[in-house]
Length: 277
Image 1 (tube, one colour):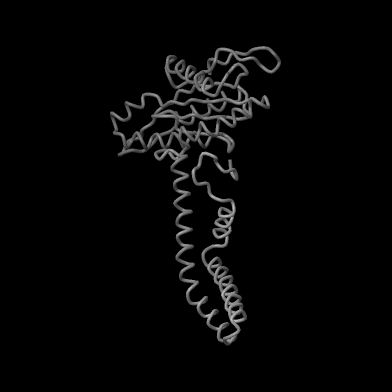
Image 2: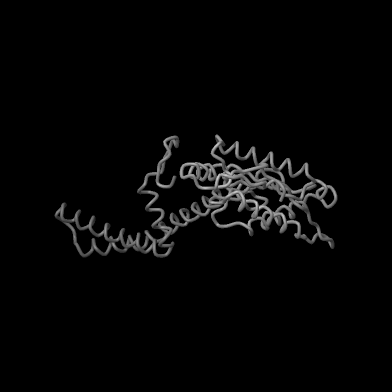
């Protein structure tokens, strides 16, 4: 969590240092150099005058001029060099953060980041008894695309599928590449029927997808397994397992379809069939 030091970190960053770094980044390089130069000038003048007063000898005007001149000549280049390193380190940190949480092929979140984020969402949904659902999406016959058109084509098709799926989601939804040609989506505040509608919309959009590749159009379909959040589920892993089971049913039923558990209780206590979208 932000603002909380990790006790397992052998060298946690002090809070004051993080705050100072944030202030420097907010001011920018030029204004930060001016601010530091001004502070150094004031300190240098105070120190020089204090020494002259303590020793009882020396010209205060000369001390003032020397302290100011040294500060103005030495501080800007040294400060600019150090601050450039700070800015470069911040850019590197941001790049590493993206690389650590995103899949480098599709640009969506990776599996590790998905599990971290969705575990918190899953716990919150269980605590407050709000609906949620999980989609497991798998591209049909993807190996055929790789075998026929090559892996570069397969990579481009997978990127297009990920973008198409992302366009059907809300900002609060969490999308990630789960492995291979599988994508996974967590839908907070979504009941079973709403999750099925999202899954069906994704299936239709991907089916209509045509990726131009070497004078031909390449497309595919997806099978989608849907798992709504149920009180009986002991963990997020079990929810993923149910989505995987539903995905297997979609594959067995001919692919290019959406499947979920045979029945889910409705809010009124009844039941409705949701196994054949």
